[in-house]
Image (cartoon, rainbow, N blue to C red):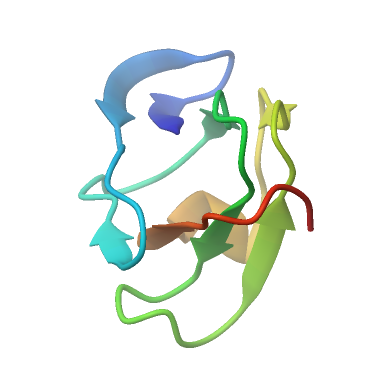
Amino acid sequence: MCVWSQTGYSGTMKKISATGSYKSIGLATVESYYNNRSKRTWLHEKVDGSGDYVCLNPGARASSLSGWQDNAKAVYLATITNC
């Protein structure tokens, strides 16, 4: 799972690869993402997995985010394929 600090997959990029637990994104903003995994990923508003969340199917991508998603703080890399 890759996230970027700016729209259009630019700015600072962070790769997250550990499965089975909430992982801090560690960026002030998340403006774009690409779930380049073969499994689903959950994008979470808060670092502990609380607050709003969205399930991203394998291959899901967005080049521009808004609302709470551009302030997402954690991901959860699941071991199940689809949302």
